[in-house]
Amino acid sequence: NQKTDMSVFENYESEVRSYSRSFPTIFEKAKGYQLWDKQGKDYIDFFAGAGALNYGHNDDAMQQRLIEYIQSDGLLHSLDMATNARAAFLQKFNEVILKPREMDYKIMFPGPTGTNTVESALKIARKVTGREKVVTFTNAFHGMTIGALSVTGNAFKRHGAGIPLTYSMAMPFDDYMDGIDSLDYLEKMIEDGGSGIDLPAAVILETVQGEGGINAASFEWLKRVEELCHRLDILLIVDDVQAGCGRTGTFFSFEQAGISPDVICMSKSISGSGLPMAITLIKPEYDIWGPGEHNGTFRGNNLAFVTAAEALNHWKTDAFSESILSKSELFKKRLNQFVDEYPELQGEVRGRGLMLGIASAKAGLSGQLAEAAFERGLIVETSGPDDEVLKMLPPPMIDEEGIEKGLDIIEESIKAVLG
Ligand code: PMP
Image (cartoon, rainbow, N blue to C red; front, side, top):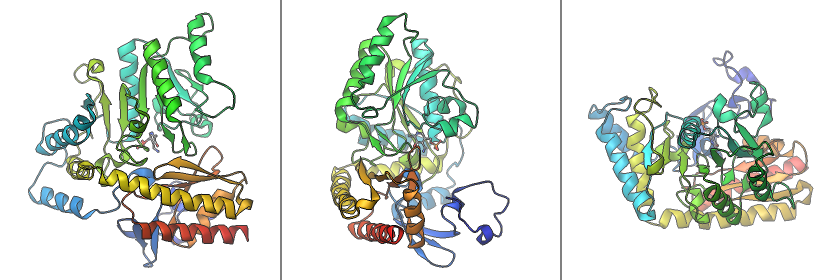
């Protein structure tokens, strides 16, 4: 996706490769599910900061809380010192999210990004078990540090940095290979003892792989992974960085499968506002960090705590969750119509909740559709190992009108690209 005329970016020539090439304009304003560029052109957002804006841009209540907090001279930065903003978030997360689900977890602030929470999860699993290896899956994406990349199934991202899968082994994700049961295989090889497959410290997975191409694991497979972990005393880490915070219809993506991970990684939409924040949830028996063993300067972003606490109001009742699931039905129905009406797409609809995609067997088509959509005022990305999936992540707060308008643009783009 490199057709961009960079001349629009007068003051950006010195920036290294970025999303500017996919979305060649300068953005000025954003509200809800819409953005406006310098020329005043409006765009519908089906990208939502790659899942960081589940409550939309500049939510009124979050903006108000931020203004009040700043005007009261509340601390902005506080490392891991106690502040009212931090306490308010912790209390609310317990009351609104954990208690009603009867979930008992310790909350850790591992650093500001998704990569940081993954890194902390890998470290705690190794410390708890005294083992090294982590099982990961084909097309997994877990972040950009050497640790997180070493469990990421994207060879392009790994190889550039020369990162082998030294501390991990990749198994086929659910449905990746027809007729091959990767979980039975893994268990047998571990039991074999002589196979060279050591007992791993952890299994890490996304319930719906975002960057890997909107691959949704079946609930049955997720349950089997959990059983395997219990049987062999392996920690189960669910990376809910992209699929969490309501993206698939429930606060945690794994709730619907009825599994109970040992460690949960969350970031992206946890602050609600797009401010950087991450949390790692750890079952209390595994909270064995020594003081100062995992630290970092930006673990105390109080502005993020303020909006994160406000965002949790969406989860006091089931209304938000129900609305996401019903919007998902509307969305999927239309995507299926596109696939049926335009067979040249060679398309397949994938995903869960409002984490959806059309995978196309035609090389390069998804990228062309994303470009055509951008020209028509829709921001949408591609994902998958060959960028073969048009990936749609509208902010779940979007209304039906926004969904229909965005999908109209996708249909126009399909017609234009297929000619
Ligand atoms: N895990 C998953 C599942 C992700 O989708 C991402 C980001 N796309 C990350 C981890 C890394 O998050 P970050 O970019 O904030 O480091």
